[in-house]
Amino acid sequence: MEKGIQKQPLGKRLMKQWDFQIMVLPAIVFLLIFSYGPMWGVLMAFQEYNLFKGFWESEWVGFKHFEMFFTAPEFWRILRNTFVISFLKLLIGFPAPIILALMLNEIGNMLFKRVVQTITYIPHFISWVVVSGLMFSMLAVDNGPVNDLLISLKFIDEPVSWLSVPEYFWSILVTTNVWKEIGFGSIVYLAAIVGIDPALYEASAIDGASRTKQIFTITLPGIAPVIMIFLILGVGNVLNAGFEDIMMMTRNLNNGIVMPVADVIDTYVYQMGIMNQRYSYATAAGLFKSLLSITLLVSANWIARRFNQESLW
Amino acid sequence: MKLSAADKLVRTLIYIILSVLTFITFYPFWNSFVISLNSGADTALGGVTFWPRDFTLNNYKVVFKESHIYDAYLITILRTLLGTLLSMFFTALFAYGLSRKGLIFKKFYTLFAVFTMFFNGGLIPYFIIVYELKLYNTFLFLLLHGLISVYNMIIFRTFFNQLPEGLEEAAKIDGCSNFGIFFRVVLPVSGPVIATLSLFTAVTLWNDWFIPAVFIQNQHLIPLQTLLVQIINAGTTATLMTNLNSYAQSTIANTVTVKALQMATMMVATLPILCVYPFLQKYFVKGVMIGSLKE
View (spheres, one colour):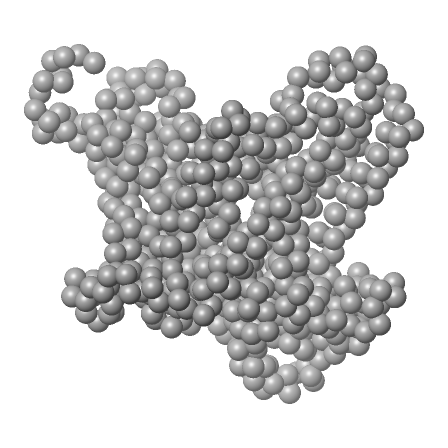
């Protein structure tokens, strides 16, 4: 830029572009209060926060809440649930949309393809409240379609109360997640498939590769970079084991029978902080999760770079 | 291209798998819709699958007897409309400011915003801030929550950066102020981006049950989805049933069950989304693309 303008005092230069500064101002103030405020507020994990005393008057207690959290009898259970549920979601929920995209790509009938896409995208736009309501209805003991079907196929003799068996909870949760997101998740991969050079298919067809073989030799490698990016993001996100889905599938954490396998760090933070009003303790638990998450994201990216693949930074 | 026998087999399998997937995605919606239109007493006998056996609108009549549902509907509609409008306005304004060349502190502002995408203080400190600002239990907070979306800001900014410079120059020569350019030149040509982002924002606001559940205590300020949580989960089904009994005794003679009511309420909360879905579909594929290009 021109040197002359640079040399003017800052105040004067700001005045000159006051209108642009005013455009930016509301958002900056908003983020300062509602995003940076809570980041600063994380310090209350080291306090005995009292709603009536407020942040400035509350007493400092050091690592007390962290110690309490790490030695709580439910700590290991919650940590296990967080890791297992997240891992299962990644293991099954991550490849599912890729497989769907690969299958959709093989469909020649455009009408059929459109119908499948239109229908499978829908659940993404439906709230977890409604999705859980649908699942409760499908899995109901009395006249639930799943029970009816399994009985008529003679797989079971009498209706099973699916949602009251802890052993089934993880499968139901993961299946519901896949059901909800598989269609929408496939969009990016379908777009990546469109970007593959058609000449590759022609060349391999001349070499005698079958259509099915091409899925694995051309389509899948063609979208590998996109898959890698989403995998890194997925691993970084792994501890977000899901919150809304668990809240809803356990009827707002009220389904006591499955809670031992259902509570994760996020639901625990909600339970301790909002329901029991142990603000500082819940903040400590939440902070612990954030630190774990950041560690995971950084390591995932580091591993990806070591393998000389795509990385986020 | 000719397909081998093995290819044909694979293709047939794919058609079958996709048909099953489509069916299991569609059936829960359809079945719930059918149950919501079927007499509750008849549904309890079992076997209601694809079509109402004992058609009735009584379930919906009872749902709309629940007086809270009108409040809830109003709150949801107001929040969705105003929230989307405000969020789009302030986010676009922010993005436009940031897209201007020579903006002082541009780098700082951008970093300041992007940082919040990766780090946040978590639910409890957020709750405390909201509480200390006296925004707890107010409708204003329902509008403020998520007002600035950094993610949407980046999409807006990318779009504004690509606008031809001549467009703004021409307006400037005509004596337009910078705000005037934003309102009269930039916003009108941003139709498709605004439409895409608005639809996503609106769906998110419509579906949100959690923020009101945590931050709103006043039953009259609760949106539809949060009311639905109460109805689907045990607690207020009892209250709903007492409401129902007085009404049921007079008109519908006990054919309405809790399940039928839940299904009808779910449909009431979902049908608007399903109605805008065809319009949504046109835009969201584009939206997902813009979003992933950013990576």
